[in-house]
Amino acid sequence: MKRKKKAYPYDFKTGFGVTGMGTMSTIASSFMSGYFLVYLTDYAGLGILGATIAPVILAIGRIVDAVNDPLQGWIIDVTPRMKFGKYRFFILLSIIISAISIWGLYSIPDAIKTSVPMLYIWILFFYLMYDIGASFSGNFALIQTMGASDVRRSKLMLYSRLLSVLIGAVFSALLVIVNAIDASVNNFGKSFSITTIFFMVAGVVISVPCLLMVRQGDTEVKKEKDEKVRFSDVLTLFKQNQAFLVHFIGVLVRNFVYTFMTATTAYYTKWAYSANIETGQVDNALLGTITMVTTIIIMLPMLVSAIISPMLLKKLGSNVKVLNRANWITFAAGILTFVLQLLGILQLHFIFFAILMGALSFGNGLCFVPTQSMWMECIDYNQEVSGKPMGGTITALSSFIGKAQIAISTLVVGWILLLIGYEVDSVTGNYLGELSRIPALLNWFIVVCALLPAICSIATIFIYKKYPLISGQTAASPSDRTIEA
Picture 1: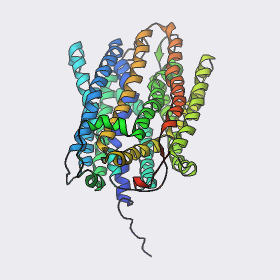
Picture 2: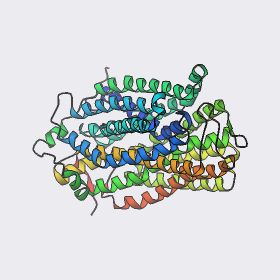
Picture 3: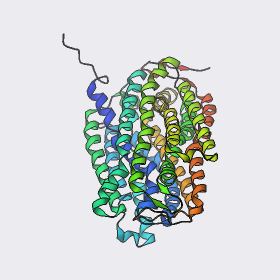
Picture 4: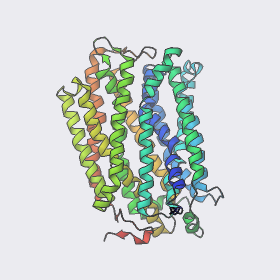
C-alpha cells in the first residue's frame, strides 16, 4: 500500500530545507567563535597587534549592535508581505552578507597590513558587515510562521542541531586543511584564507538551495495585518513580555558556556599538548590532529545530547527542567576541570582534557533544542500580550546575544594575551614571548574555558525561576499554553 505523503509543514521537503538553510550561519559563527582571535594573533602576521586590534573592533561592534540589531529586527517586522516570503528574503540576504564578510575578515591583503589605520578600517568594515548579516538570519522566526506544534518545532530544531554537529565535525579538520595547503603555499596566513574561501563556498552552495525548499507560512501575515509594528514596540517587548525578558537574560548568561568553552580551547591544546614549553616550538602536524580530535570530542556529545534532549523534554514536560539538568552537568564538569588544572594533573595528558570537555559539551548540547523552542514560545506569547508576534525583532535580539557573547569572550582572551605578552611567529607558529609565562597562561585559559562556564551555568538556574510559561507542551496554538499563576 502506498504511503500517504505528509502535508506541509510535516513533509520531508520542509524538514530537509529547514535543516540545511542554517549551514552558512553555523559556519560563520564557528569561524567567529573559534578562530577570529587565533587568526589575528597566530596566522595573519600581525603579532601582538592582533590581540590589540580585536578588543577595539569588538567594542565598537557591540556599541553599533545595541542600536543596529533592534533596528534590523524592526525593519524585518515592518517589511510588507512578499511573494518570496520576507523571512526567506532576509535569510537569503544574511547568507550572502555572511559569506562575503567572513572572507574579508580572514583574507587581509598584505598591502593593508602595512598601514595600521587601514588595517583597523578593513577589519572593522567586514566585522560590522558580519554583524549585519547575522542579525538578518531569522531561521526560527520563519519556522514560527508555519503554525506547527511544539513537537514539530523541537524536531526541526533537532535536525538543525544535528547538521550543525556534522558541520562542526568537518570544521574540526580546519587546521589540518590549512597545514595541507601550506605544504604548497608556505604561508600560514594565505593558507588560512584559501581554506576560508572553501568553507564559504560550501556554505552558500548548501544553504541557498535548502532555503528555496522552505515555504513561509501565512500565520505571521494574518496576525500583523491590522497591527502595525512601531519602533517603540521594541522597548514595549521588554516591558510586557516577561517570557521574552527572562529568556533573553537567561540565554545571555547561559550561552556563555559554549563561547567561553571554545574561546581558549585551541590555545590550551596548542601550548599544553602540542608545543615544547622550554623552547616554544610547536609541532604543527600534531596540533592539527589534536585540534581535529578536540573538535570531534566537543561535537559528538552535542550530537548525542541533541538526540536525547527532545526525549528528556517529553519526560520532564518542561524546557526549563531540561535546562536545569544541563546546567548542573556543565557546572560539575567545569569545576572539576579547573581543580585538576590547579593540581597540575590536567596538562599531564590530553585524555583528561578531552573527557572533561566532552562532559561540558554534553551539558551544553542539552540546552539547544529547548532554548530555540523557547524563542518561538516568546514570539507566540508576544502575540497574546500585544497582538504582534514581532518575530523579526525577537530574532535580531537573539542574534545580538550571540554576537555579544563571542565579542566578550574574545575580549577576555585578548586581554589575557596582552597581559602575558603573547606573541607568535605567523610563519612557523612558534612562541616568541617569555617562555616562563606559558604555565600561567595555561591556568588563565582554563579559567576562561572551564571556570567561567561553571559560574554561568549555576547563575542560569536562578534566572529561569522567573520564566512564566509551562513549556514543552504539544499544542499548536499559543492559547493552548498554560501560564503560571
